[in-house]
Image (cartoon, rainbow, N blue to C red; front, side):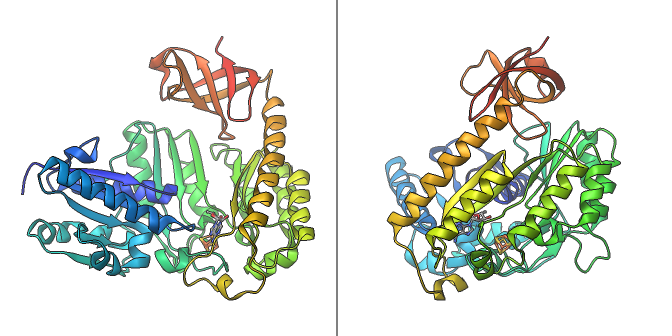
Length: 435
Ligand code: 5AD
Ligand code: SF4
């Protein structure tokens, strides 16, 4: 069937963004064209996330809105639900919502070319649990011509008590290094200057392949044309001295490390099953700061995990203050289906969890502002990303530290690295000038 149109909406993390790029590329390879609103689309894909509570309900309410839209416009719309909610709910989605035609998990994306003719013939079905190696990257439609996501692994073998990911994305599987290197070489040839290596747990990359993440970084670092290498997410328990030495030896690997601590209390970390203590984590931070001076560290933190006492919470605030993160993503603990945290005692009221989150975020805001203010007066390299969203006469870009900078400049600079003098700092961004 030719000339079919699709619209895709992405929820959640960068892994999902990358999956959506691949879903879009596959659809285009199969004769579809992308449109900017669901109203114009023959096929709407919702690429969903289930990391926190309420995600399923959000998907069902979006599906309701699509049903209304379809009735209003009077022409048929097919709907596919992909991603983590698809994997978690499976066939249930088909029976609960008659407007859904296809449900597929993130590991079934490679089978889309076989699914499409069935979908187009009017079949309603779910494609889950296809466990293939993510070796073939497929075609991606990338949002930006200068920065690209590259998936290096899928799934997670850890079993953090709060986390639904091992259930939705399955066990860890690493892509072969040759395929990753070839993909990055191709990106460099197309003019990309920054890659972000993606995986649920990149620091354990290479299991079963006789290689590891440090080796992979070294190989990617050697590719001419690539100026910045980002990676996410790292796990403290696999963040090794060898990897720290590699970060120090590879200047194109950005001076930014996202290292989720999750809690500043050893008792809570143990109940979460994280596999490290606060002191062990801090030793790694000290070491990476000594070897890579100026590295900006960011983190994820969960407040209100079952059994978290006020003293545990104070320990989290203390850790945040002492470590001095550039930024953090703070979350209220939320109950996820099938996770072991559900069976723990001491689940806390929403009131307590909310109050703790407000306190944590207020503290981080002060620290972020201090960190940003410390950059004022410096001239730093900025990778120019585009016109500023708020003010089209301005450009915006990022420091290695991943901090956003706004400045006046020529749109021709987009995709290049420019020296920018930082003149002002706010919590959300920096202001600078090129001279
Ligand atoms: N409740 C709250 N936050 C969670 N995260 C993962 N699962 C949960 C949950 N059940 C957070 C963790 C993780 C980030 C991506 O989302 O901090 O690092
Ligand atoms: Fe979830 Fe823990 Fe795996 Fe991260 S490392 S995806 S938090 S189980």
